[in-house]
Image (cartoon, rainbow, N blue to C red; front, side, top):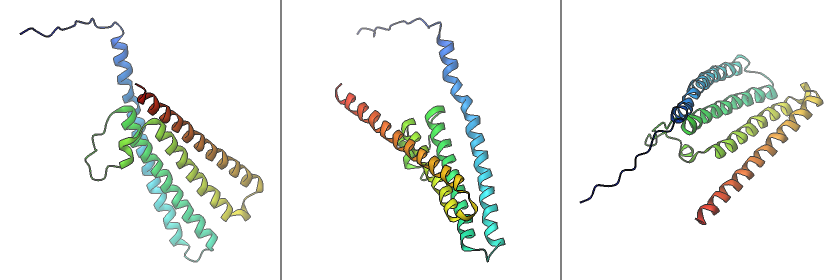
Length: 182
């Protein structure tokens, strides 16, 4: 029986640099921890705003709607933070190895940077929608100039989201067709 042929390769002089670059991904981990701390702030802010509703039980309906939209806004931002922390860590730092946990988010198993950009953009459109709705509910206290700019910015978020989704679809479509040709 013959021994399998072993090819000897010399270590590249650039390997230490490559190792450093690969290890540098861990520099992002403290930033994700910082986003978790920011999410804690949003939990505090949510309950602070929730208490405002009970401090003024006879408030005008428009004021109640604005407060409730503020709660929704805080929740959407918190969801966005959770999505960025989990997907960013999983994509750019290291696997979390939580796939078998019963609460593991299904979307995380097929997450990639393109999908996350579209999800982020759509979350920003949702948050912008809440702000715009708050403006329209409270329009008597908002200048037409401010309302106009909020509409323009919201439209730009929407167009950007559609452009990201469209380019992501093109990239995924080209990736699928080129994979079929090999």
